[in-house]
Length: 106
Image (cartoon, rainbow, N blue to C red; front, side):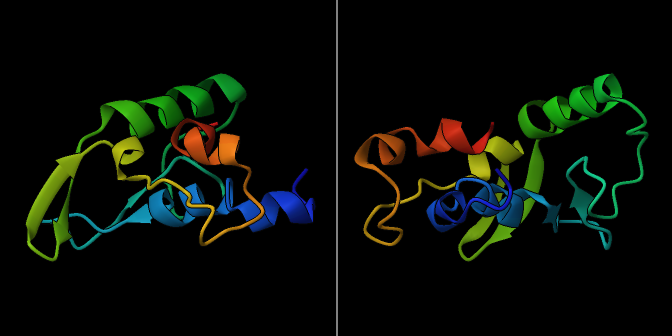
C-alpha cells in the first residue's frame, strides 16, 4: 500500500506524518518526536507492543504546547490534525473527506 499512488494523492498517510512526525514545543529547544523509526525518537521501539503503546500514548494522551500565530495551544497530537478537503485533494472521496480525521489516525 505504501506505493499506491492513489493513497499518496489523498494525503491520508502523508498529512498526519507531516503534522505529527516532529513537533516544536514551547519552552524546549528539542522537538517532540512521534514514536517511529524514521525520526529522532529516543524511546524503545524494539517490538510491536512497545511501539504501539508509545504511539498511542503520544497521539492521544500527551498534551503538547505549540506556538500559534495568535498565542499558544496545548493539545495532544491527534487534535493537531486537520481535515483533508476534497477541494484541495480531489482524489479523496466525499466519504473519506467526511471521516478524514479518524482515517489519519490509522
